Amino acid sequence: FRSLYITYHFFLQAILNGTKDEFVSVKTIDNYKSKMKAVCSRCDLIIYKDQGHAFFANPPIKYFTETTYEIDLFLKSFGVLKGEPTIK
Image (cartoon, rainbow, N blue to C red; front, top):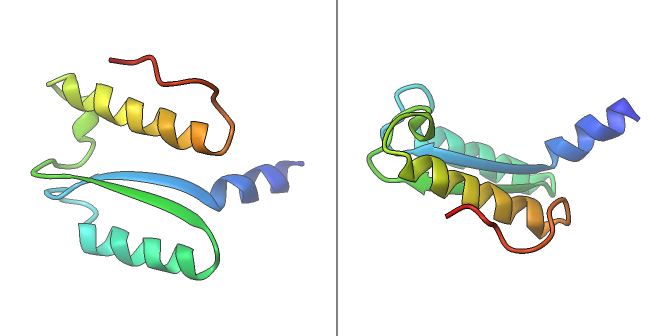
């Protein structure tokens, strides 16, 4: 069961990245997404302009709200969550 769990999560990924991330560039993430697509994995990439690494964990709270909303939609898209996101 554990290996199935790991595999399941490996093939369904959402990546939220800032254009000013000093650790992982958008180019690197985009390359990764292409490699995941090549092995039939789903890898959703959402880019946030002018945001650095872990931008959602810092003020303003708007980015925490936006990223939580996007993750809710991602989880809903394959049945982990039901209904519309409730975060506003």
